[in-house]
Image (tube, rainbow, N blue to C red; front, side, top):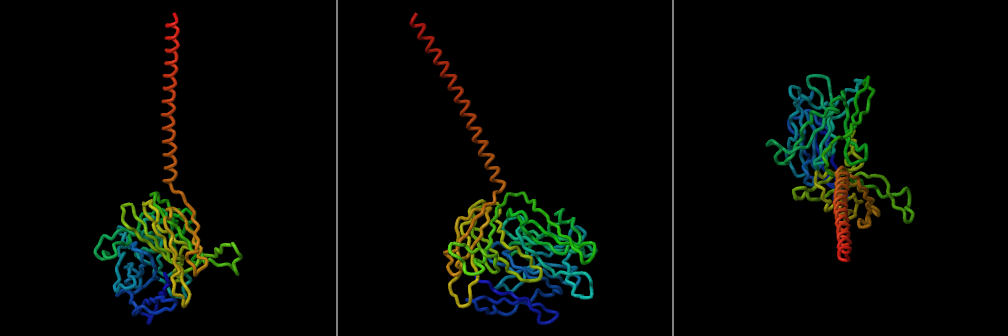
Length: 397
C-alpha cells in the first residue's frame, strides 16, 4: 500500500524505456533494469495502470504503433516482474475499414493542436474488469472518433496468460455520431455510480472545441462500490470535534475481496489519482464494479502513503460493505489507521424498486385473501346464528 514511482524515459530519439522505482519505507530504489518498449514499435503512447484481469494487482497498459502513421496499432500489457509484453488488442478492423491510433504531431509550426495517444480507464459495464476509451482514426480517410474498448475474456493464444483482452465496441451509435473527437474520458455525471462519457471534439476551426456528454444507458442491474479517499487535513490546526475532510489526495490504494455470483473469490484494486501524465484526466474517485453479485464486500482495504522513516503501514480494513454505495474515507489521524472514519452513502438500484413493488404486491395479495376468508367466515357465522334462532323457536312451539 505504498505509492511507487514509474517513469517513461528516452535515452535517445529512437528508443523509449520504462523505469519502476519501488518505495521502501519512503526511500525509492530502482527495481531491476529499465524495461524496453515492445520490439519493432515506432510510436509509443502514454502508459496507464489498471487491474486489467481482476487479480488484485495493477497491470501496465501501453498503446503503440508499428509505423509512424499508425497504420497498424496495438495495446500491450506487462507488470512488475514480467519480462515480456503481452498483446491485449491488435484487431482494429471494422468490416472493410482499418482504424488506428492518432499519432502525436510534434511539429510546432502546425496550427492544429495535437494530443498524445492516451487510454482513459473506467468500468463502463460494472463487471469488475476496467474498460477503456481511445481516439482512433480511419487509416484510409480523415475521420477520427472516440471508441469504447471493452474488457472481454481472451479468445486467442497471445493473451491466454492474462485471460482478458480488449475488444473495440464498434456499434455504440451515440459515440459514433461525434466526429473529429480528440479526447474522451469517463465521469459519473449523475452521481449514480454509473460512469458516463465526456468527449472533446474539434469545432469549426482548429482552435475551437466542443464538449459532448453521453449518458451511460447500461441496463443490466450490476453492482458497484464508489470510494473516495480524502486528505484528512484542515487549513490549520483542526478544532476539537471537527472532522477534517480535506480534499481527495493522490496516492491512496484501494483493494477489495468478495464472492461472485458463482461462489468464487473475486479481487479488485485501484489507485486514486495515480498519474500525472499529459491529459491523464483521471476520476477524482474510484468506481469498482462488482458484476451481478449482490453480496456484501467481505473486506475493503484502503492504504495511504507514509512519510520517510515510518515503518508501520497506514492501512485500514472495513468489512461487510453494502453494494451500490459510496464510501468516503477520512484518514485522520494519518498515523492511527484504526481511528480512520468512513461515511457510507447508498445509491438504490432498479432491483430495490422492483423488490418494493413485489413486496407491496405480495402484501396486497395476502390482505385480499385474508379479507375474502374473513368475509366468508362472517357469512358462515351469520348463517349459523340464524339456524340457532330458528331451532330455538321450533323447540319452544
